[in-house]
Image (tube, rainbow, N blue to C red; front, side):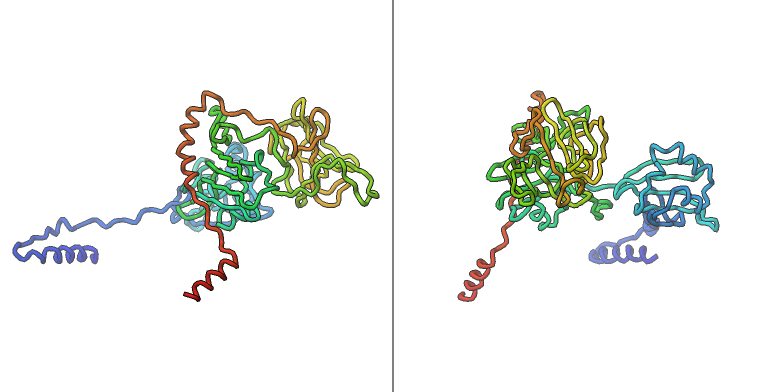
Length: 430
């Protein structure tokens, strides 16, 4: 009723300014139906219709036990387990994952719906009402385009994190340029620019970043553009190409471990004090990293050895083609077996200290035509460039993106302490 009197009062105020005219108010027209509040749903359900139990999977929990505790009939549990394995494999629920059980609003409180959150965006619904049903869905996601740039003072990760940018942008950027830039030898003053999208759930909950759409990296004064482009629509393969449509990917990764450091390089003239400074050539490149760090296959190939032997400890050897082979020593454990085919970037084992080693690392060995060589000095073969028929569309696609990258400005450098003192002195004299 207060709403109606408010409208009448507003009309009275407006019309009172026109004293010469008699105003008749149509009170029937003012009988406006009250506006009902919209129903707010979560995961497609009105939670007010249920008694809600919200929790996370604990160690020892199983889907069957959770359902039995909440009065679900055993045949329904069996049906979900057997008939919906492709949608919801009950054996793969993970400790720490959130879930909701929507129960009937009565004294029985029998489970009606089970909702399992696979990740912050994807979830699985098991509807136990009437006939059993299971399906996957996604929360509504908002994508916001972001631009970032930086000038490297110490490291790429520090330059990005200083700006409050998601660490995954560092990881993505290093993967794009993994074949063209040696990230162990970045120089002070190297620059970068990136365009990417951030994901938000319900417009406010941050849910991570999408792969980088385009980037620019200036290393040792050499500019390198990178544009994500689908070069095979049938296989949905996306690669990164430069402004001349050259593929930035190489047939080999530069390193078998992400964000590690080189503790010992390939050196045929190495002499070790422990062995009386005798000549003991080191035909591998050692990448130091914590125990358990994943070791990656640097190129596609077939595993020819996965075993343990002498000073090598546990190791894997991969034959990539008739020219190249690689070997990965001192593993904590291998993930692959002899005869398996692996793809570039696949995890083949984990950093360890097996065999002759003074600390956790992987000794990476590289063969070319049956002879061990230094992979960091090899000019590794390029991946296929963009096919000629696709180039006109590609150049048209990247033109506005390149302009956008070029227009991104770098952050102003922080003033040095001496500059601040000079500035303060100038202010005092004024």
